[in-house]
Length: 472
Ligand SMILES: NC(=O)c1ccc[n+]([C@@H]2O[C@H](COP(=O)([O-])OP(=O)(O)OC[C@H]3O[C@@H](n4cnc5c(N)ncnc54)[C@H](O)[C@@H]3O)[C@@H](O)[C@H]2O)c1
Image 1 (cartoon, protein in one colour):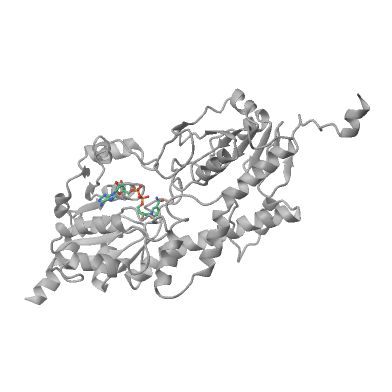
Image 2 (tube, protein in one colour):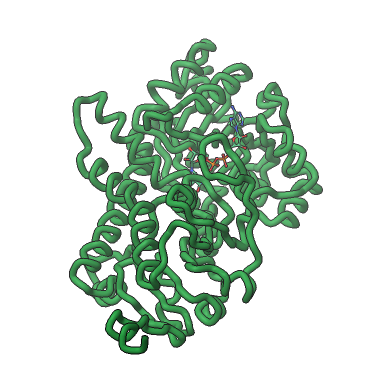
């Protein structure tokens, strides 16, 4: 009897996966869930997406994508073919043989993990859990979440993981806007509650992803993701500190980075910028730090790196004040155009963007701030930001707009922006990304490390007191 229960679900499920008749469920159809649903459909699985937002569900069923990396025509093709359906009806998850959970994992105001979305989604999945289902948590979280938080809720149903149903953690590593490394060709790490769980998830995901990387446990897979993003966060902090070191030494930070990057081994290039943004790098290390605090271990590297990165918007505002000062102007009353507000180039994601902090800080100093961004055309009141004058709309990047700004601050280096035009029309530019490094125009360009990179053709030296008194 118990032998049947152990053998039956896994054998049946593997057969369904193998002949592509299993139904793939995706819970949460955002930046992670929608691309995953598309890849699942592309691999021939009928895919059912469940989301709590009716507008997301309706849009997908109309074939309209709300995610930049998923082109609407591609989505529409799978919707029309019946391979992708979205639903607001959680009970339909019972139709699914595999369920990938891709819901947000934000931080609370006190920077503690907020697992409320994961808990809600897990309870929803538990309500329709049946023997033979594979559940994969994709949301970034601290080690132990799958086993200590998700598993007990699912097992409250009386079903047992590794026997009746299968439970894994597989971190999503998607890099929005990256045309080379996509959902499909980025290797997929999987860790399970039992070896059978890994086997089943491996069988499913190896049909969707080019490479599957099994690790020994769900905890190891959870740690892989937070370690990767902590690695990135710490190295960004290091290069942001380098920019400030260079400022004091009078050295151009880009010169140093480019030369260091010629070392063919033992060095990885990171670039300085105005601060961290997005849903991952600023948040994920805090998940690890929080977990380690519960084990009486202080993750000191994370603390110091967070501090350096969190200070970058303030640093940019100090540089903006210096740049204006260089022209005999003050922040107060100056017209400042923020060029790029998305948290990184070529995407439309504003979440945690340092631009929001920079705008707020500049406004607090009395600056009159506007922005241009080809991807994020409006900044709305999300209930968190204290930016004044919301909604703010992107201004067109015209000659008149650039010429009338006292200062242009390049916060996000979108590749579609014509930086030569910016250098030709703007009087003064603070370039936090090195976007104008190889461009000369009339603008006086100041880099993040403080060097005046291009003095500007039209720059007029101010007369000294001696010159003024000599002519009067
Ligand atoms: N965005 C990225 O670049 C990225 C990359 C790797 C990993 N991640 C991780 O993936 C997870 C999801 O992030 P995202 O960027 O896709 O978030 P998102 O906000 O873009 O999408 C989440 C979706 O989940 C839906 N949702 C929330 N609660 C739900 C519930 N109980 N049931 C069903 N749907 C629900 C929301 O309506 C939303 O559509 C997070 O843990 C994040 O850290 C994100």
